Length: 407
Image 1: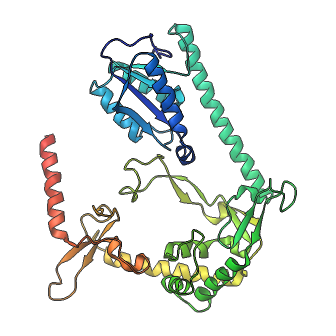
Image 2: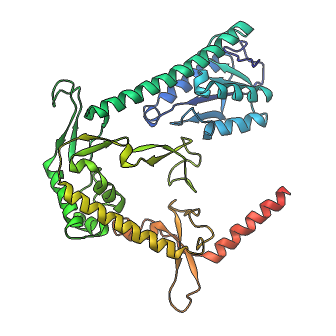
Image 3: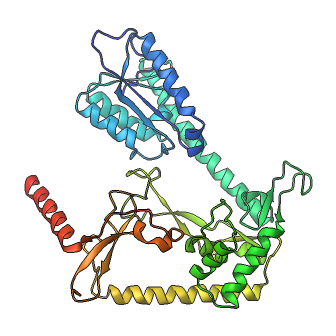
């Protein structure tokens, strides 16, 4: 049976190397600095035991789910432990190390095999077999209770959505204001969407431009910028993705959708710009079909006919774009690093671009940040284009060298 040390064996021996691990699950907790309180308690306990922590042995995961073992801070901790870089690890509680009980056991067994003593500060339990068994049973029950709470919450929200309660929707889209049920503005214990006329006029104008005048999304963005209309976040530039999401929102025809997405497989070739290389969650989100969504009545801003015309135009644009992409990639990917290369200066993606003229056979890798039309008419990156053949050759040589080294 794996032994979990709850409160250590008192004072640390001379020269012992201490480490600490702290984790919070959500971005909100990370912004509220609750991880600092964990670190403070751990440092106090380490000081009371007569030790200190080097900066390199302080491992933190801010806003990372404990349901997965793939976490940046935890990965560094495991590597350091395997290399023999620590003697005792302090963690506030077992659920900070991992949410699932089986993951806790795997990690503790791995650390102890590397000669690391694990100390859980908030669980002062002795090392007797009885107390060890009690702790593990409590961990299994706690995991079961969390699963039950999540399932009850999910079923409760689905029931509320089927009853037409707007409180399950939360934040209102552009053109509305969300009236929370605790404010009493829409009635005692009732939530509602209130129409904001200034924004509602903008929404109607966007639908008219696309549905009746046949404007492209780029043209709509230019018109809104010329009129000085700002987005819900206060930006002057309306991106095509923002406009597309607005035009697809069924709330504007009076039917707000609940359960638009669901948990699915993570599909990502490279990390998002500004995000960690290791994702915070082991899964992704995918859109549910309309037949699986629950629609809740809200005040309508446009009629059903105009909404249907706009959806047809968007679908036609998607078909044309897919046909163009299929034609370009009929023989496979046109570029060796397609979807993988990232600009080293700004972090935006690189894409392949063919140059017309006398040297038609030449192609280049170009940074998205150089495309001014994507960023309100101005470039955000000055990284020059590079020859595709040169970069492909360098990457291929590195791959072959790595394969040769492994052999």
